[in-house]
Image (cartoon, rainbow, N blue to C red; front, side, top):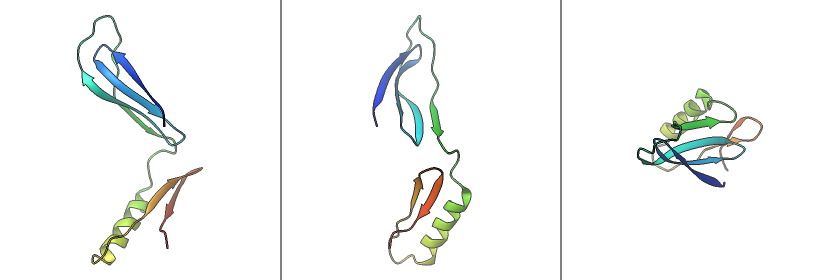
Length: 85
């Protein structure tokens, strides 16, 4: 993922995007006259991650608290829930 620094009237921001998300985050706040202000931004390409994925993850984690578990939510033409074997 590549990123750019953007200067705005309200500070310095970092912008980045790839096929899964667009993001703009403030790095430093300051006042700079003559420029337009920017706002924070975070957009997921496929929209919000489905609640059922969080529910499935939590159920799996709570079913066996004696060990660590790994789940992945993969973005590839939509969201996919993956539990490695």
